[in-house]
Length: 224
Image 1: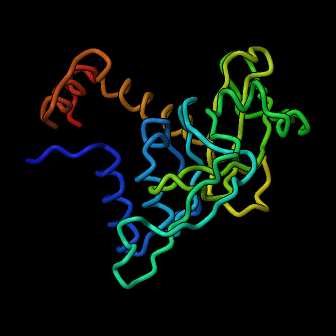
Image 2: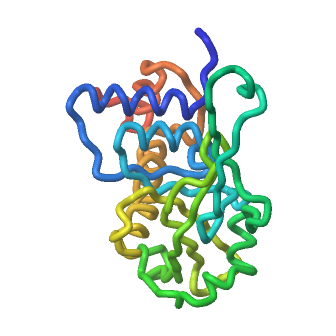
């Protein structure tokens, strides 16, 4: 068995599902996957819409930087013309999304909106969110976009900030983007409840027979 990163395994699973005729309106995942640009590019190649939680260190531009083309030095005198796009020197550099929240004049012009994202143990959880356009770097470190940059924070704890990136259509509402982004928590809760019912929070096993034995013990040795 050869080691493969989780995002590579995930990409293969998605490709297999698509090959079997399964289609997804949206995919969402945490920053462990959202922080892997090759994974995001792979989803776009498949034509798959996503809302990805991204690390605070993700770089981008709130306005598309200007480009210019220049002859590549190694092609001079070779009898062919090769022009490659480059960022203009006087462009505003890409910045981390956490600094966009702090300093961007573009973001300051957009009002925060409140949404009831889910019901918690202590009642409804209300988050504030904002959406702006973002251009990110491609594999050649050139700008590509625009994407949706969604910044969300709990209304009662504005210091707990989450950042999401989406390649969805530009007409997609902020409400829909948040609905997709927060749907991951429902799946995580289902996994947590299932593990508790199986007793997997009390012991670690690798085989199905161990789980069966544990369930028999919980059921008073009744057949399952």
